[in-house]
Image (tube, rainbow, N blue to C red; front, side, top):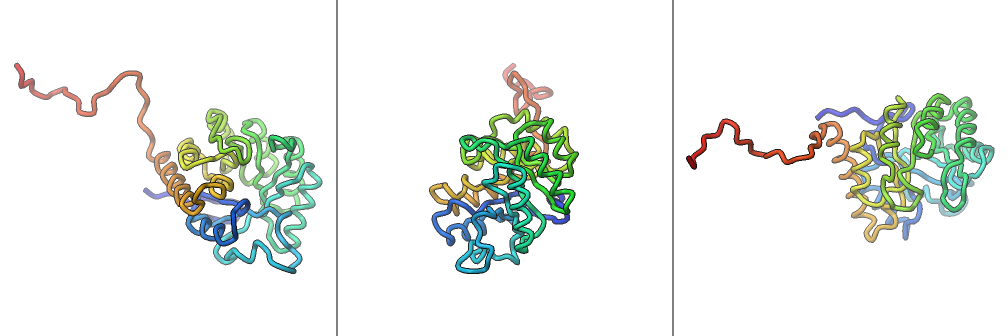
Amino acid sequence: MYDSNLTLGSKEFTSRLIVGTGKYSSHEVMRRAIEESGAEMVTVAIRRVNLDGGGESLLDHLDLKRYTLLPNTAGCYTADEAIRTAYLAREAGLGELVKLEVIGDARTLFPDAAGLLEATRVLVKDGFTVLPYTNDDPVMAKRLEDAGAAVVMPLGAPIGSGLGIRNPYNIKIILESVSVPVIVDAGVGTASDAAVAMELGCDGVLMNTAIASAGDPVAMARAMKLAVEAGRLAFRAGRMSKKLYANASSPLEGVPDWTS
């Protein structure tokens, strides 16, 4: 079945899985897991990357000709802080794609909606392709689109929780409310969670902890790749309608009654 590529700003990707680079036991495990995931875009926390060119850097372990980097503003708690961090990444040569995070609460890591919207407007105006991490709020999703966000990235559950998609109905409303791609970001715990997100009609899934903290990160990365592909194919194929009562797989209408 023919499928279009995932378009994020001016870039196109055949993979709809985006993976992170944090929490791995070693750079080698990270490298192998990312390769097995089939992802073409990887996120890097700007604050955790050595940008001055001195000493070992996380970027030394990534094939920058193979992967598109998506710098993120993880750890920023104000719009100004996130904006400055995005500028720093661009000045260091990491480009104008940015996963925008403005955190409102240190315990839950839920986004600060007001700060996120403010930072999106500023960065879009200054030429960034902004991918904002937001709550599963359809109203905010639409406001981010109107502010120029290239994508909206609602959480499935709190960051690193592994709880899966807690409110699929809000995700479905977001999908109906915006015309830009919708990528579930945060909360995925295992392959079935990724499949659910894609079966809802999401354009992609972004994850880190679900792979990096698995017993076998490399195997989980492959499981996530297959789950995203299967979920996308199932969505495009169209599921059967749900029924309250049984419906025989082999109908008897028109079949002779040999017992009479």
